Image (cartoon, rainbow, N blue to C red):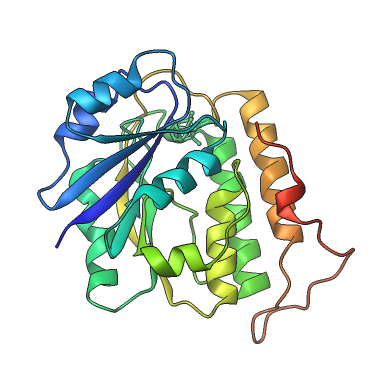
Length: 241
Ligand SMILES: Nc1nc2c(ncn2[C@@H]2O[C@H](COP(=O)(O)OP(=O)(O)OP(=O)(O)O)[C@@H](O)[C@H]2O)c(=O)[nH]1
Ligand SMILES: [Mg+2]
């Protein structure tokens, strides 16, 4: 059984050779290249990946284009910056294949200094707590290494094309009654310069995108506190980065 692995990529030339060389057998890399200017697409192709060119900028745009290009029953998603080892993909894919979970998340377990800045870690923990409270999802991390069934994922109708995409996936899956679980996955210092968590602009953009997704939560989980506040703005209305 083949499993497609979507790798959103924006200027990850330094990371791709290692990442792609670590794909376990049976896993096929789909590099969704988001207009890289450092030769990432050529390097990805040279290392055997299927390359999808994604002109619309944004993490969600890249992930979604990769998902549309995938054809396997189960698909994985992971960052292309060498912060994860593809050798760990079976830990998220196997429970989905075995029917034990509908969406499997890799909970980041830090290995090495500087892998996960404190502000990002705290922000992530606050978000996970909010998710537990609002939609009853038992996760402690919104980890970007994931696995789910492709057609079911497409059926969620995700609209975010920026940095709210990973959160929107969990929210919509929870609203659809999916069984969501997490397992520990090693998280290493990324290769190359940080674009998001290590920069003020990237962090602020992410917080803004995440808040927009939280505002779109409609169905409170059984036993969760009822949602309050103004009607949610449609995610499709947002601009792309
Ligand atoms: N920042 C950014 N990353 C993108 C985009 N499109 C695809 N990516 C890729 O998405 C993955 C995650 O982005 P990262 O920049 O690593 O974001 P992060 O892990 O939250 O933060 P840092 O690793 O600290 O920069 C990487 O593989 C990026 O190359 C985009 O428009 N912006
Ligand atoms: Mg990263």
